[in-house]
Amino acid sequence: MIKRTLYFSQPYYLSRRLEQLIIEAPVDKNLPKLVKQADPIPIEDIGLIVLDHPQITITQGLITRLLEHNAAIVHCDDRHLPTALLLPLEGHHTLAERQRVQLASSEPLRKQLWQQVVVAKIKNQAALLQKLNKPHTSLLTYAKNVRSGDPDNYEARAAAYYWAHLFPSDLDFRRGRDELPPNNLLNYGYAILRALVARAIVGAGLLPSQGLHHSNKYNAYALADDLMEPFRPFVDAIVQQIVVGKKPYDTLTKEHKARLMMLPQLDVRIRTERSPLFNATHTVAVSLFRCFESETRKLALPSFTESDTPDLELQLPLT
Image (tube, rainbow, N blue to C red; front, side):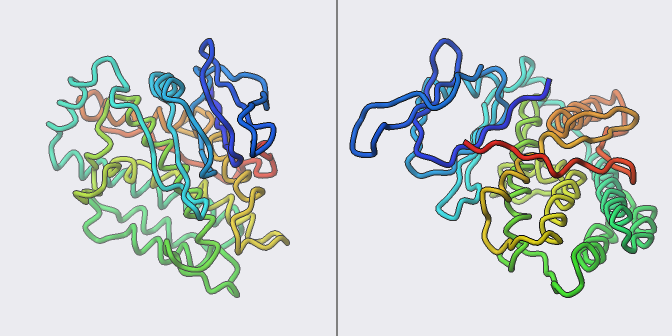
């Protein structure tokens, strides 16, 4: 079952009652009295909560229950961009054993797994460009040439080609966290994706700080940054559609956020199976542990083809 994604942009009071999320708000900003704003939501049905207002209040009891059900809690800053992620310390009943196996994995294995991740990412970038009727065959050549550990840095070569063709040519797009729009849209979508992947990693009993390729000592989610790579084109597909639309995107609006928050529901193919992206992140994380455990050496990674066009016109109700 796909878990629910909830987004709050008003000064709500969020609490727990009988294993339900209770949403309340003041009758008046000068009065302490609270009134119910929506029907209660079973906590066990929640996978991700985004808190995007400085005056939101969330009780400790609710936070505890959310984490017990492996929900991820994302906090946004004054610019309405995700800035912090709260995850449970224990996401699996055999946590210590799984992390021991993860830490004992060999460098050659990690390099081979990173090779698979890079190949899947590049193929998904090519599939998206093909879907948009844009040049893409060079990316397929890059994907074929990726070696263990990607010592030739085909990931970066593919990225340069991909960003040069994804958006309209008159945009003169440069990808960078602090660069001009639509980087603001990409940053937001990637932050949501990172939270989903980190949640799946913890749920699989793995350490999110121990990456396959990313290894910055200040990065607590290096493994999430690795495993999210093949999922990035799903975010890019949403942003590309926003960019070619008629509405401005210089500012991150509620409508833009609604589109990007549909990410967990997008249809993803892993081998012959289809599932929502939310569930697919868990499949990938579990397959990684199976590789660490030597049960297999092949990661289960997401892909989409010409026929897998996601329904990006769906709207997520904003609270």
